[in-house]
Amino acid sequence: MSNAGKVILITGAGSGMGQLAARNFAGQGAKVAALDISDAGLAKTAENQPNIRTWKVDITDYAAVCQAVKEAESQLGPIDRVFNCAAIMPFGKLIEQDVGLQRKIMDINWGGLVNIANATLPAMKARGKGDFVSFASVAGLIPTLLTGAYSASKAAVVFYNETLYHENLGSGIRFASVCPPAVATPLLEQGKSAWPKMIDTEGAPINPQTVLDAIETALDKGQFEVFPTSRARIGAFMRRMMPKAIWKQVHKVEGW
Ligand SMILES: NC(=O)c1ccc[n+]([C@@H]2O[C@H](COP(=O)([O-])OP(=O)(O)OC[C@H]3O[C@@H](n4cnc5c(N)ncnc54)[C@H](O)[C@@H]3O)[C@@H](O)[C@H]2O)c1
Image (cartoon, rainbow, N blue to C red; front, side, top):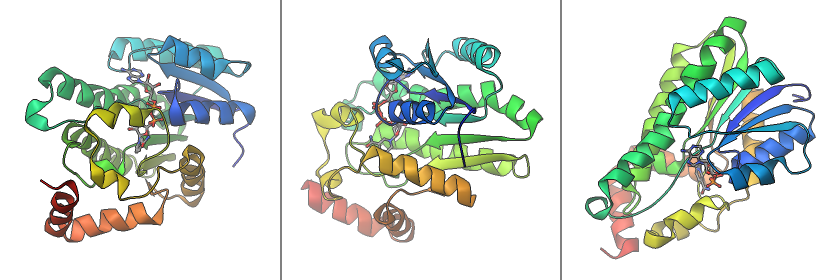
């Protein structure tokens, strides 16, 4: 489906997959509202791209999110599509990881999604159309050692997405819950201080464009769950069927 002329709001648009999506959509003739907390990231996203407008917003601030959505709609028009990409991913052993940081991970990764959903979905519902795409993660389906706080936040995103989808069946809004394995973006740097060996057994991080292509295919097919690789889909299935065996493998790989 063509995105020309569409109004697309993206959080986490200052880096990685949000940035790539913003520039792709703008290149296709969409009008993009790019939200991020990083000025430098937003400037790079909008470089030489007249179809991208930027808003510096902390996604955890509901009043600021509502204001940005209001301004984006008045400047660009009603929002046709939302991409929820903003997240952070510090890793660490749970009882050693700073309590404030663990709560912040939940506040940004899940709380930010709650803020955007409440700020954008009522208008989409009233219009009876729109796309609402939210990035969860394989980590939200398969917990491992050292990723506990991030996995918990992404598990919250998985269930939140699923409930949103079911509560709005028949609304005309297409929902997608995206569960990628490791993707080659700057996010990975944040996990380097306590990197689980388990992630490396999954092979090299995949290309961000592969994830974006999988989202378009899923939306066109009306599929809610998006697994950009079959390995990610099979891994999630195995974890559901045999969690103890997966944990056994995790301990073996990590060596503790
Ligand atoms: N990269 C991966 O391996 C991977 C794998 C699975 C899922 N994901 C998910 O995909 C999404 C996109 O990830 P990415 O790899 O492109 O990440 P990224 O780190 O490249 O980009 C994330 C962006 O979110 C922004 N952000 C962080 N806190 C914010 C806040 N409080 N308010 C507003 N913006 C904020 C950052 O400034 C950054 O620009 C995330 O939800 C991530 O959890 C990523």
